Length: 383
Image 1 (cartoon, rainbow, N blue to C red):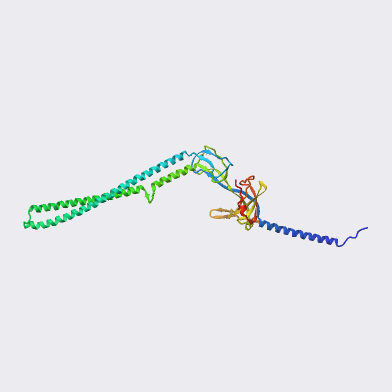
Image 2: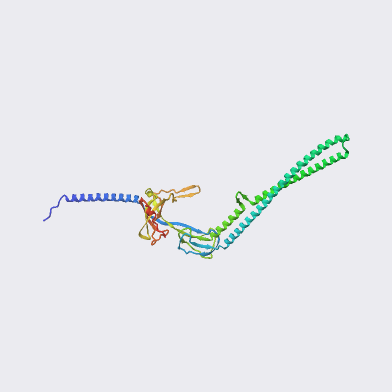
Protein backbone atom coordinates (compact mmCIF):
# COMPACT_ATOMS: atom_id res chain seq x y z
CA UNK A 1 0.00 0.00 0.00
CA UNK A 2 1.55 3.36 -1.08
CA UNK A 3 1.96 6.23 1.39
CA UNK A 4 0.39 9.43 0.16
CA UNK A 5 3.00 12.17 -0.48
CA UNK A 6 2.71 15.57 1.14
CA UNK A 7 2.18 18.09 -1.66
CA UNK A 8 3.95 20.87 0.39
CA UNK A 9 7.24 18.92 0.72
CA UNK A 10 8.84 20.17 -2.53
CA UNK A 11 7.98 23.72 -1.64
CA UNK A 12 9.56 23.32 1.78
CA UNK A 13 12.73 21.97 0.24
CA UNK A 14 12.92 24.92 -2.15
CA UNK A 15 12.37 27.32 0.77
CA UNK A 16 15.04 25.64 2.87
CA UNK A 17 17.48 25.77 -0.08
CA UNK A 18 16.81 29.45 -0.59
CA UNK A 19 17.29 30.18 3.09
CA UNK A 20 20.56 28.24 3.14
CA UNK A 21 21.73 30.08 0.03
CA UNK A 22 20.92 33.43 1.58
CA UNK A 23 22.69 32.44 4.80
CA UNK A 24 25.75 31.34 2.84
CA UNK A 25 25.85 34.61 0.91
CA UNK A 26 25.34 36.64 4.10
CA UNK A 27 28.01 34.58 5.84
CA UNK A 28 30.42 35.21 2.97
CA UNK A 29 29.67 38.91 3.07
CA UNK A 30 30.10 39.08 6.83
CA UNK A 31 33.26 36.99 6.71
CA UNK A 32 34.69 39.09 3.89
CA UNK A 33 33.85 42.29 5.74
CA UNK A 34 35.50 41.00 8.90
CA UNK A 35 38.58 39.87 7.00
CA UNK A 36 38.78 43.19 5.18
CA UNK A 37 38.40 45.12 8.45
CA UNK A 38 40.96 42.98 10.27
CA UNK A 39 43.35 43.18 7.33
CA UNK A 40 43.24 46.98 7.32
CA UNK A 41 43.27 47.33 11.09
CA UNK A 42 46.16 44.89 11.40
CA UNK A 43 48.15 45.10 8.14
CA UNK A 44 50.18 42.01 7.47
CA UNK A 45 52.85 41.11 4.94
CA UNK A 46 55.23 38.26 4.27
CA UNK A 47 57.51 40.49 2.18
CA UNK A 48 59.84 41.35 5.05
CA UNK A 49 63.44 40.77 5.99
CA UNK A 50 65.58 41.15 9.10
CA UNK A 51 68.11 43.97 8.81
CA UNK A 52 70.82 45.55 10.93
CA UNK A 53 73.18 48.47 10.48
CA UNK A 54 76.44 47.58 8.75
CA UNK A 55 79.61 49.57 9.37
CA UNK A 56 82.68 48.98 7.27
CA UNK A 57 85.93 48.92 9.25
CA UNK A 58 88.54 50.82 7.29
CA UNK A 59 92.15 51.62 8.05
CA UNK A 60 92.80 55.26 8.94
CA UNK A 61 96.54 54.86 8.30
CA UNK A 62 98.57 52.68 5.97
CA UNK A 63 100.80 49.91 7.22
CA UNK A 64 101.27 46.20 7.69
CA UNK A 65 98.89 44.35 10.01
CA UNK A 66 100.94 42.93 12.87
CA UNK A 67 98.10 41.69 15.11
CA UNK A 68 94.63 40.38 14.28
CA UNK A 69 92.49 39.66 17.32
CA UNK A 70 89.19 38.62 15.69
CA UNK A 71 87.84 35.87 13.50
CA UNK A 72 85.05 35.91 10.97
CA UNK A 73 81.54 35.82 12.52
CA UNK A 74 82.97 36.53 15.99
CA UNK A 75 81.06 38.71 18.46
CA UNK A 76 83.00 41.70 19.78
CA UNK A 77 82.14 44.19 22.48
CA UNK A 78 82.54 47.94 22.37
CA UNK A 79 86.17 48.99 22.75
CA UNK A 80 87.56 45.53 22.05
CA UNK A 81 90.81 45.53 20.05
CA UNK A 82 90.23 44.31 16.49
CA UNK A 83 93.63 44.57 14.83
CA UNK A 84 96.90 46.48 15.04
CA UNK A 85 98.84 48.17 12.25
CA UNK A 86 102.61 48.36 12.73
CA UNK A 87 102.93 51.42 15.02
CA UNK A 88 106.72 51.89 14.81
CA UNK A 89 106.78 54.36 11.88
CA UNK A 90 104.07 56.45 13.51
CA UNK A 91 105.82 56.33 16.89
CA UNK A 92 108.93 57.70 15.16
CA UNK A 93 106.85 60.48 13.58
CA UNK A 94 105.43 61.33 16.99
CA UNK A 95 108.90 61.50 18.54
CA UNK A 96 110.08 63.74 15.72
CA UNK A 97 107.04 66.01 16.11
CA UNK A 98 107.72 66.33 19.85
CA UNK A 99 111.36 67.21 19.15
CA UNK A 100 110.27 69.82 16.60
CA UNK A 101 107.93 71.25 19.23
CA UNK A 102 110.82 71.65 21.66
CA UNK A 103 112.91 73.28 18.94
CA UNK A 104 110.07 75.67 18.11
CA UNK A 105 109.68 76.64 21.76
CA UNK A 106 113.44 77.27 22.10
CA UNK A 107 113.52 79.22 18.85
CA UNK A 108 110.62 81.39 19.99
CA UNK A 109 112.37 82.04 23.30
CA UNK A 110 115.55 83.01 21.45
CA UNK A 111 113.69 85.32 19.09
CA UNK A 112 111.87 86.89 22.01
CA UNK A 113 115.24 87.58 23.64
CA UNK A 114 116.51 89.06 20.36
CA UNK A 115 113.39 91.15 20.09
CA UNK A 116 113.86 92.43 23.64
CA UNK A 117 117.49 93.34 22.84
CA UNK A 118 116.41 95.16 19.69
CA UNK A 119 113.77 97.03 21.63
CA UNK A 120 116.33 97.97 24.28
CA UNK A 121 118.65 99.23 21.52
CA UNK A 122 115.82 101.35 20.14
CA UNK A 123 115.17 102.86 23.56
CA UNK A 124 118.88 103.55 24.05
CA UNK A 125 119.15 105.27 20.67
CA UNK A 126 116.10 107.33 21.41
CA UNK A 127 117.71 108.56 24.63
CA UNK A 128 120.93 109.35 22.75
CA UNK A 129 118.95 111.25 20.11
CA UNK A 130 117.18 113.22 22.82
CA UNK A 131 120.57 114.08 24.32
CA UNK A 132 121.83 115.10 20.87
CA UNK A 133 118.78 117.30 20.36
CA UNK A 134 119.42 118.96 23.72
CA UNK A 135 123.07 119.49 22.71
CA UNK A 136 121.94 121.07 19.45
CA UNK A 137 119.72 123.50 21.37
CA UNK A 138 122.64 124.39 23.68
CA UNK A 139 125.06 124.94 20.82
CA UNK A 140 122.42 126.90 18.87
CA UNK A 141 121.88 129.16 21.87
CA UNK A 142 125.63 129.68 22.26
CA UNK A 143 125.93 130.30 18.50
CA UNK A 144 123.24 132.96 18.69
CA UNK A 145 125.03 134.61 21.60
CA UNK A 146 128.37 134.63 19.77
CA UNK A 147 126.67 136.00 16.67
CA UNK A 148 125.17 138.90 18.61
CA UNK A 149 128.48 139.45 20.38
CA UNK A 150 130.28 139.68 17.05
CA UNK A 151 127.70 142.14 15.78
CA UNK A 152 128.35 144.26 18.87
CA UNK A 153 132.14 144.15 18.49
CA UNK A 154 132.32 145.04 14.79
CA UNK A 155 131.08 148.67 15.27
CA UNK A 156 133.35 149.08 18.23
CA UNK A 157 136.33 147.87 16.19
CA UNK A 158 135.69 150.61 13.63
CA UNK A 159 135.93 153.15 16.41
CA UNK A 160 138.97 151.30 17.82
CA UNK A 161 137.27 150.61 21.14
CA UNK A 162 138.33 146.93 20.79
CA UNK A 163 141.47 145.49 19.34
CA UNK A 164 141.68 143.49 16.15
CA UNK A 165 142.67 140.42 18.08
CA UNK A 166 139.46 140.55 20.11
CA UNK A 167 137.42 140.80 16.91
CA UNK A 168 139.24 137.92 15.25
CA UNK A 169 138.83 135.86 18.44
CA UNK A 170 135.06 136.51 18.44
CA UNK A 171 134.81 135.47 14.79
CA UNK A 172 136.82 132.30 15.47
CA UNK A 173 134.59 131.37 18.36
CA UNK A 174 131.47 131.89 16.18
CA UNK A 175 132.91 129.75 13.39
CA UNK A 176 133.82 127.00 15.85
CA UNK A 177 130.32 127.14 17.36
CA UNK A 178 128.70 126.80 13.94
CA UNK A 179 130.93 123.87 13.05
CA UNK A 180 130.05 122.21 16.34
CA UNK A 181 126.35 122.86 15.64
CA UNK A 182 126.61 121.26 12.18
CA UNK A 183 128.37 118.24 13.68
CA UNK A 184 125.70 117.90 16.35
CA UNK A 185 122.93 118.09 13.71
CA UNK A 186 124.66 115.43 11.63
CA UNK A 187 124.97 113.17 14.69
CA UNK A 188 121.27 113.68 15.50
CA UNK A 189 120.28 112.76 11.94
CA UNK A 190 122.52 109.67 12.06
CA UNK A 191 120.84 108.65 15.32
CA UNK A 192 117.40 109.10 13.68
CA UNK A 193 118.44 106.76 10.88
CA UNK A 194 119.82 104.30 13.41
CA UNK A 195 116.55 104.43 15.35
CA UNK A 196 114.54 103.73 12.19
CA UNK A 197 116.79 100.78 11.34
CA UNK A 198 116.59 99.45 14.91
CA UNK A 199 112.81 99.78 14.90
CA UNK A 200 112.66 97.88 11.61
CA UNK A 201 114.85 95.15 13.06
CA UNK A 202 112.71 94.99 16.19
CA UNK A 203 109.53 94.75 14.09
CA UNK A 204 111.09 91.99 11.99
CA UNK A 205 112.08 90.11 15.14
CA UNK A 206 108.54 90.43 16.48
CA UNK A 207 107.06 89.15 13.20
CA UNK A 208 109.46 86.19 13.23
CA UNK A 209 108.22 85.31 16.71
CA UNK A 210 104.70 84.98 15.14
CA UNK A 211 102.92 85.99 18.31
CA UNK A 212 99.19 86.77 17.99
CA UNK A 213 97.79 87.85 21.32
CA UNK A 214 98.45 85.05 23.79
CA UNK A 215 98.99 82.49 21.02
CA UNK A 216 102.27 81.82 19.28
CA UNK A 217 101.70 80.56 15.74
CA UNK A 218 105.00 78.65 15.52
CA UNK A 219 104.44 76.79 18.78
CA UNK A 220 100.79 76.08 17.95
CA UNK A 221 101.75 74.70 14.54
CA UNK A 222 104.29 72.40 16.20
CA UNK A 223 101.66 71.31 18.74
CA UNK A 224 99.26 70.55 15.90
CA UNK A 225 101.89 68.32 14.31
CA UNK A 226 102.26 66.48 17.62
CA UNK A 227 98.48 66.03 17.87
CA UNK A 228 98.29 64.72 14.30
CA UNK A 229 101.13 62.28 14.98
CA UNK A 230 99.39 61.09 18.17
CA UNK A 231 96.17 60.52 16.23
CA UNK A 232 98.01 58.50 13.57
CA UNK A 233 99.59 56.40 16.31
CA UNK A 234 96.19 55.81 17.94
CA UNK A 235 94.73 54.86 14.56
CA UNK A 236 97.15 51.93 14.47
CA UNK A 237 95.08 50.28 17.21
CA UNK A 238 91.61 49.71 15.76
CA UNK A 239 88.84 49.00 18.27
CA UNK A 240 85.17 48.08 17.95
CA UNK A 241 82.98 51.21 18.08
CA UNK A 242 80.03 49.20 19.44
CA UNK A 243 78.90 45.66 20.19
CA UNK A 244 78.74 43.83 16.88
CA UNK A 245 79.44 40.71 14.84
CA UNK A 246 82.46 40.51 12.55
CA UNK A 247 81.57 39.61 8.99
CA UNK A 248 83.35 39.27 5.66
CA UNK A 249 86.79 38.99 7.23
CA UNK A 250 89.22 37.82 4.57
CA UNK A 251 92.65 38.93 5.78
CA UNK A 252 95.38 37.83 8.16
CA UNK A 253 98.52 39.16 9.81
CA UNK A 254 101.07 40.44 7.34
CA UNK A 255 98.54 41.99 4.99
CA UNK A 256 99.34 45.59 4.02
CA UNK A 257 96.39 47.82 4.80
CA UNK A 258 95.99 51.03 2.84
CA UNK A 259 94.37 54.09 4.39
CA UNK A 260 90.69 54.15 3.45
CA UNK A 261 90.55 50.49 2.41
CA UNK A 262 87.83 48.38 4.01
CA UNK A 263 89.11 45.21 5.66
CA UNK A 264 85.82 43.79 6.98
CA UNK A 265 82.44 44.88 8.29
CA UNK A 266 80.64 44.92 11.63
CA UNK A 267 76.97 44.03 12.04
CA UNK A 268 75.59 46.34 14.73
CA UNK A 269 74.10 44.19 17.48
CA UNK A 270 72.52 47.08 19.38
CA UNK A 271 69.48 47.45 17.13
CA UNK A 272 67.81 44.94 14.83
CA UNK A 273 65.01 45.75 12.43
CA UNK A 274 62.49 44.11 10.18
CA UNK A 275 62.09 45.96 6.89
CA UNK A 276 58.56 45.11 5.76
CA UNK A 277 57.28 46.14 2.32
CA UNK A 278 53.60 47.07 2.73
CA UNK A 279 51.24 47.99 -0.07
CA UNK A 280 50.42 51.67 -0.31
CA UNK A 281 46.77 50.87 0.44
CA UNK A 282 47.75 49.84 3.99
CA UNK A 283 49.90 52.87 4.84
CA UNK A 284 46.94 54.80 6.31
CA UNK A 285 46.70 52.12 9.00
CA UNK A 286 50.42 52.29 9.89
CA UNK A 287 51.93 55.02 12.03
CA UNK A 288 55.29 55.29 13.82
CA UNK A 289 54.99 54.11 17.40
CA UNK A 290 52.52 51.30 16.72
CA UNK A 291 53.24 47.86 18.10
CA UNK A 292 54.08 45.08 15.68
CA UNK A 293 54.51 41.31 15.74
CA UNK A 294 57.37 39.72 13.86
CA UNK A 295 57.57 36.01 13.06
CA UNK A 296 60.67 34.51 11.48
CA UNK A 297 60.68 31.56 9.12
CA UNK A 298 63.76 30.21 10.84
CA UNK A 299 62.01 30.13 14.24
CA UNK A 300 58.45 28.83 13.71
CA UNK A 301 56.00 29.77 16.42
CA UNK A 302 58.30 32.32 18.05
CA UNK A 303 56.87 35.83 18.22
CA UNK A 304 59.13 38.87 18.43
CA UNK A 305 57.56 42.11 19.55
CA UNK A 306 58.50 45.29 17.76
CA UNK A 307 57.59 48.90 17.19
CA UNK A 308 57.16 50.85 13.96
CA UNK A 309 59.94 53.46 13.77
CA UNK A 310 59.37 54.87 10.30
CA UNK A 311 57.81 54.57 6.86
CA UNK A 312 59.77 55.07 3.69
CA UNK A 313 59.14 58.28 1.79
CA UNK A 314 60.24 57.11 -1.64
CA UNK A 315 60.87 54.12 -3.82
CA UNK A 316 62.26 53.66 -7.29
CA UNK A 317 59.55 53.23 -9.97
CA UNK A 318 60.10 50.24 -12.23
CA UNK A 319 58.41 51.70 -15.33
CA UNK A 320 60.20 55.03 -15.64
CA UNK A 321 63.74 55.39 -16.96
CA UNK A 322 65.79 58.53 -16.85
CA UNK A 323 67.91 59.44 -19.86
CA UNK A 324 69.50 62.84 -19.80
CA UNK A 325 67.16 65.44 -18.37
CA UNK A 326 63.90 63.88 -19.61
CA UNK A 327 62.17 60.71 -18.37
CA UNK A 328 61.58 57.85 -20.77
CA UNK A 329 57.99 56.62 -20.49
CA UNK A 330 57.02 53.39 -22.26
CA UNK A 331 53.87 53.42 -24.41
CA UNK A 332 52.12 50.57 -22.66
CA UNK A 333 48.79 50.15 -20.96
CA UNK A 334 48.54 47.93 -17.91
CA UNK A 335 45.09 46.44 -17.47
CA UNK A 336 46.01 45.21 -14.00
CA UNK A 337 47.17 47.97 -11.65
CA UNK A 338 49.47 46.78 -8.90
CA UNK A 339 49.81 48.80 -5.72
CA UNK A 340 53.28 50.07 -4.97
CA UNK A 341 55.05 48.91 -1.86
CA UNK A 342 56.92 51.10 0.63
CA UNK A 343 59.40 49.89 3.23
CA UNK A 344 58.30 50.12 6.85
CA UNK A 345 61.07 49.93 9.45
CA UNK A 346 60.14 47.96 12.55
CA UNK A 347 62.62 47.78 15.39
CA UNK A 348 62.65 44.37 17.07
CA UNK A 349 62.44 44.92 20.80
CA UNK A 350 62.46 41.40 22.21
CA UNK A 351 65.62 39.34 21.88
CA UNK A 352 66.09 35.66 22.58
CA UNK A 353 69.69 34.47 23.08
CA UNK A 354 68.61 30.98 22.02
CA UNK A 355 67.27 32.36 18.74
CA UNK A 356 69.81 34.90 17.48
CA UNK A 357 68.82 37.28 14.76
CA UNK A 358 70.66 37.20 11.44
CA UNK A 359 70.55 39.80 8.76
CA UNK A 360 68.55 38.62 5.76
CA UNK A 361 66.18 36.24 7.59
CA UNK A 362 62.68 36.06 6.09
CA UNK A 363 60.00 37.55 8.31
CA UNK A 364 56.22 37.86 8.54
CA UNK A 365 55.09 41.16 10.03
CA UNK A 366 51.74 42.23 11.44
CA UNK A 367 51.18 45.81 12.59
CA UNK A 368 48.72 46.08 15.47
CA UNK A 369 46.30 48.96 15.96
CA UNK A 370 47.72 49.97 19.33
CA UNK A 371 50.76 51.92 20.42
CA UNK A 372 53.75 50.07 21.74
CA UNK A 373 53.95 50.17 25.52
CA UNK A 374 56.98 51.52 27.35
CA UNK A 375 57.64 48.04 28.76
CA UNK A 376 57.84 46.54 25.29
CA UNK A 377 60.09 49.33 24.08
CA UNK A 378 62.66 48.48 26.76
CA UNK A 379 62.39 44.71 26.47
CA UNK A 380 65.60 44.08 24.55
CA UNK A 381 67.68 41.36 26.03
CA UNK A 382 71.23 42.60 26.69
CA UNK A 383 74.00 40.37 25.49
